[in-house]
Image (cartoon, rainbow, N blue to C red; front, side, top):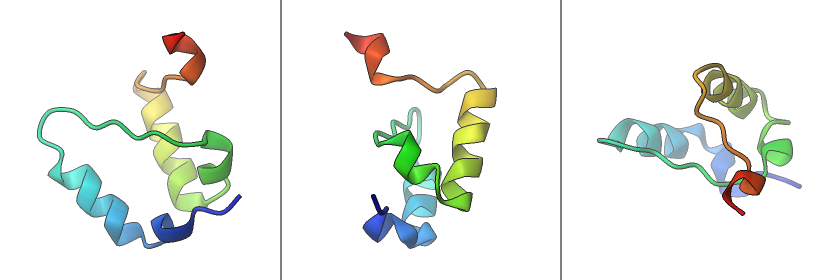
Length: 58
């Protein structure tokens, strides 16, 4: 898959920096993780204990 409009990192920057209390990012980690920017974002989220999989919400 491709990340499409998310390839414009400014969009994600706006979404992340405007969050006041919580930020939820929903997507396919394999697809977005193939991109260096998002791979680093996923690593950061995982290292801070904030990564969840869909299977945790069944």
